[in-house]
Image 1 (cartoon, rainbow, N blue to C red):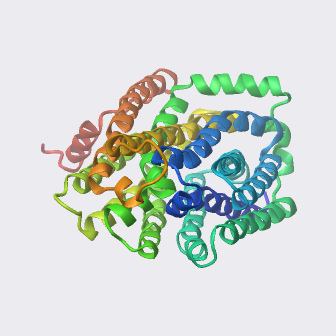
Image 2 (spheres, rainbow, N blue to C red):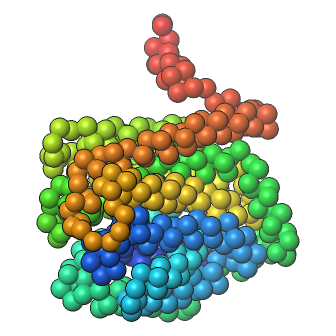
Length: 444
């Protein structure tokens, strides 16, 4: 394996993912501008983001099957081209219906990039470096959110809707060119070993992947850890900070970069912990989700307007949830053969985005119901009142709580399988800690 070639593919692929995140999160700073441009209620506005995520989530498993059959390079080229087309459509959209079509194309294209990159990393690298590179790839990709939160937000307010989204599309054009030139599916000597011989075989591999408890554990890990941060960064965080908290638009957009900074700091740490303690990965996920729940409780229950430090704390914890969700793909890698890794990754990636679009829509619906918002018109500040957001954001506890229950169930099944197939017993964390303490203190 040529290490320089592997490094080049990792860099180019990470840039492609950065571009995809930029296209995905571009609506996060455009919520207010979209209300002014297209009008409508909170539920209609949320449809711009929700339909994108529905398409993204729905495409994950078909994309995973196609990756197993044809390889990731072709999927990345097709997906990036779709994102270019979608952003241009959104930039020139005369009404909400055309804008929705643009976001559908963006969602379909975005669906191909991440799991293709996870497959590329597994094909070009091996060993403990794989979860570390997955975290670094995720962190590099999240810099796309910085581009949407700072330069794209500035361009949107300074130049308007069309120039801003055409500029975002230009980044995807660059990504498309470098993918075509540099990306290859895998080292040549690995092609026959990992690629499905037919689409039927790839579908069979999907069925087997879906049935594995480890794949289901990855799905629910991604579901509970990724969704809250996605909801905040892609749609509802910006209106919440501008109207409910009274932040200036530029400051609110800049605050979204805190999520990225937290991911850059904690992502490599989570990668090291995942590689070093593979039997405790689900505990790491549950610890992250607990932190997210506590941070939201502080913000939502604070009397009056929450102080800035509470919002920063929330953003930091949500930022940790992003790299935390990548642990789900490490479950997929561990419990599936490489030949079906595309399908398994597709199943896992459905998790967080399924929870995200459900929460996005429910938050918009609850905002509308509380404000009696039935038709277009009225002030955005009335629609986005702080008390209304408190109730709407609380729906996350129901959606994520459901996922935690399924995660614990999938973990039990996975541990039983490890015990049966490999003779590995995974003791509860408090038992493991107790055993470690007794080893250090044998007199106890």
